[in-house]
Amino acid sequence: MLGVRPEEAIMVGDHWMDVQGGKSAGTRTVGFLSAAADPDDFFDRVKPDLVIRSLGELIEHVERLKK
Image (cartoon, rainbow, N blue to C red):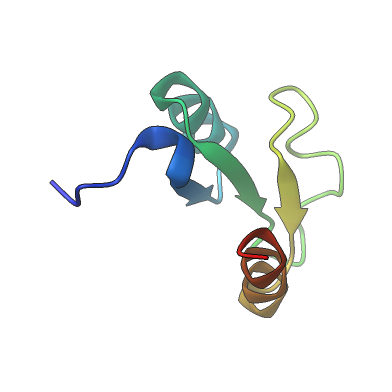
């Protein structure tokens, strides 16, 4: 619907099942640790491409990808 190939997209989710879905779709994946209570290893089982705790971090990484 957006006209973007999966390899050009980034899926951001706050649960490991979101990351699994993004990987299945062929996108890059970002695990968002949204709650202070989320342990640092919350996404270890699915190994997203990136784990962040703030959306500001995401912007920095996207800017680097564009270069």
